[in-house]
Image (cartoon, rainbow, N blue to C red; front, side, top):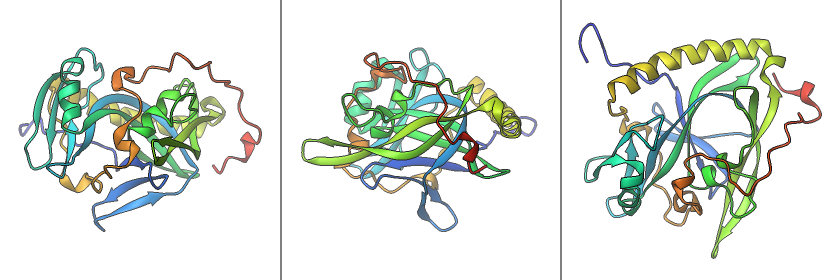
Length: 263
């Protein structure tokens, strides 16, 4: 960082996580210092996707986080904990077990344009890990890994959750679905394109400098419930965002009532 080359700031205005025990998406409001729940359905346009490690260390009672990378097989992750205590550095394949022992798990970082109302958009970041990434179990239709859609062509909606169970613990996972073809809503496509330009300017600087992502403690959500399968994650992170092999391709036929979208 210098006078002529200042550190760029992440343009996302909300960092959203899914709480599988209550079946809600939420973000931390720095002004009110409270977690705020988002009502479904959620409509958004995916701008970009990166990978990271995120979680909660039960012994230290602190959150686990890392820098974001585009190519998780090849790039170095720096896994740390809030207030110190954890410092693991290396490629994902080499450090995943050590990170897991500290409570850190694979996280898909999805930057998106959230559609609030017609003409009202926000650049947000979905931090999808555990159940929100992997789904509710075998033959699941939920979780980001089970979304069969070209996000460069379709808008996404989350309007329901799927229920799952691990042992005696019941939980939920969000169902991500295609909602509309981007070219059918040119005003939204244009807004998303312009928003992505601002995002890519930030990511170009962030990734090229290989700096650690600046994460303030005020962005950390409440500690993950140790009985919350969003923290357990039924599937191993080796999937690294790849489509489940046992799934058929998604039917990309748009749902009926497409003209009744609320924007």
